[in-house]
Length: 294
Image 1 (cartoon, rainbow, N blue to C red):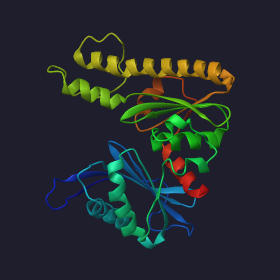
Image 2 (image 1 turned 90 degrees about the vertical axis):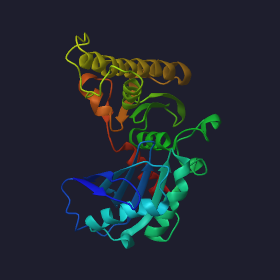
Image 3 (image 1 turned 30 degrees about the vertical axis):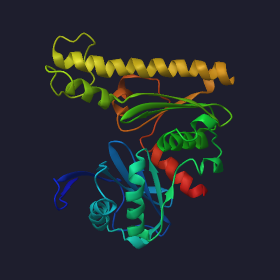
């Protein structure tokens, strides 16, 4: 369902409203509810867990110009429509790769619970089993840390997590719960938007899997270059990272699991077998795990 909400003085804001299938939004068990904000460069995921169950998820556009009160005015009707009372929220956890939005979302959390949120960041990393190189503690994105923590806690083995977002990020974990390194490339949609914005004769096209790499028109040519090109990037970089993990940490290459997450991983999933697991909610689950462990 898509809703349009107008804030005074602004254009209509498109909000993607995702209701988790199979649940009656009017009836929730009595477990502790946790509200999570996962703030990315493009979208802000707002999720509610009832105990360990994800019961509600919304996405709103990231906008540095909005104030905390404006974000709250967007969220209030979503809570109302889902029949969730603010008083049901026990914890609020905030993870962001956009530091300028920490302040506004502290205000949002205070409006909802009258308490400040738990903010994922370098101050709390030492409390968890997953360790970071000292050079990366203040540099790694909180989303990547949450991805990696959740992957390690689930699988307890060397992992590579491919997160398909505004940036395409690969996070490698060794067999001793250390983040061994990260690789970052432009995200698929970011690369496509850049191509479209900086070329005069390439139109906006759907990013579908092309029938062949040999494009005989502009649409298939761009789909081949972007979609199949990123397939090669993903498979090649994961292969290289596996080899480097073995060489630098001594782990067994057969023990390394590859997990894909992020909204755009579905674009490559049908044409590659490089992923052992696909979980679009890995980041949210990692943020929830942090809330439970503190």
